Amino acid sequence: MRCDLCNHSEPTVYVELHHNVGMLFMRREYMTAGQLCRSCLHRSFAQHTLYNVTLGWWGTISFFMTWYFLAANLMTYVGGLFELGKARPRQTERRTGTASGEEARRILEPFEHNVRLRLRTGETEDEVARDLARFHGVELASAQHFVENVREAEAA
Image 1 (spheres, rainbow, N blue to C red):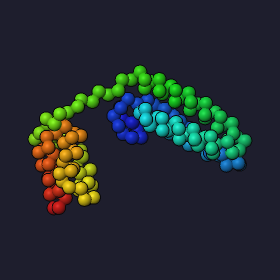
Image 2: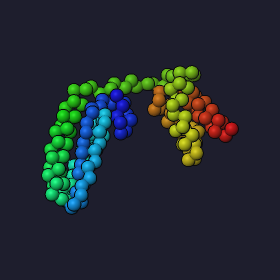
Image 3: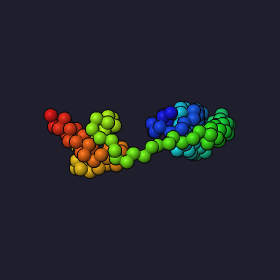
């Protein structure tokens, strides 16, 4: 599955993490809910814990809600890590630069927008093509042809 925060294809687990912001006579409650990968789970847990510890305890109700959220988030975090530990990481096959022609175009097509942005920022076609070939396992000639086509379409 894809992570809801970073959109990477990695093992994910559904979690709901909360934090409370106390404002003496009022309070606000925030939540992160979704399928999260391991790194996003770590980052979200740390962020919610930091907010709870620093901003959560201001106010009578907020004081107790903060303790509740800290405990609930800790249980959710540990449970999420346990579930992620059971899931095996996705085995990515390492391409060796063998894709060419139509297959290379099919592989590179989703990155057309990224290529346009990189060309607009002043990167050379060769730099962009080398990166595409290296990261996506296509032949350099096919990547160069793809970048040229994107540049020509952009100029038109």
